[in-house]
Length: 313
Image: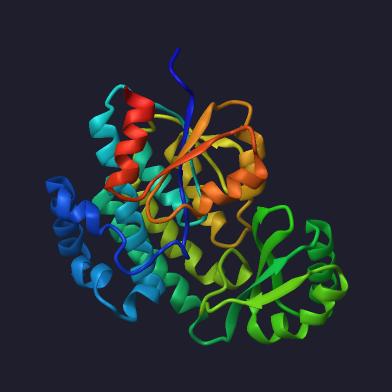
């Protein structure tokens, strides 16, 4: 019996200088994808990814870079194991666009352009305000939600943004409001409160100015070809139509990523997950969310070979 596999993709923050270099140096497919993606958005991905630079930390470049390496990893695996099919796809934030691409609902070269423009739209929405994000460790979800709700009643702009795992939640909003609530989060149980080095406030109402333009782009680029369903960050439910993709990913800009809830929702319907792309962020989260659902990861040629041997032999 073939295994039921969730194909999963991490979001922004998983990037690092040097990611994808082994793929580029050892795969003609990867080289071709680097070149095609670079021409589409006028970016030298070799320079962006393999040399020290500040651009990789800028949202409009971070997003296409992460997606490109994820889809290269996915394509190399699928080419080696053509009989392996995904039961479902799942991404964390930006990773949901990689999931959409892996499903076949958007061509990778269009996806590179889409998330490049998504990143620019997000940056533009926050450029005239001091937006930010803050990680909270060791606090219950309900306590975070209560602090945010009470702060909103007082006019502060702060929202839960990423539900990563039990005791780890990220909030987003105005940087001054986040800093003003640091003690309130500690009083509510947070063991650590960490202001992240972010110039955008993802997955909250501050990004509403970017929604309409993203919707227009998605209507143009997304198609109806889904090889397997995608789990929505917004609802934790499956979708497999263009209309749902456009609506849900438009909503995803301003609503929290329910990653923890999504993994809990799928853990009994798949045998394992494979994380594609740089690092193993989701593998680490999954160990703590769903201990009985093993997660493999493909981030370089060695890990690619290991997964191929385990899954395809």
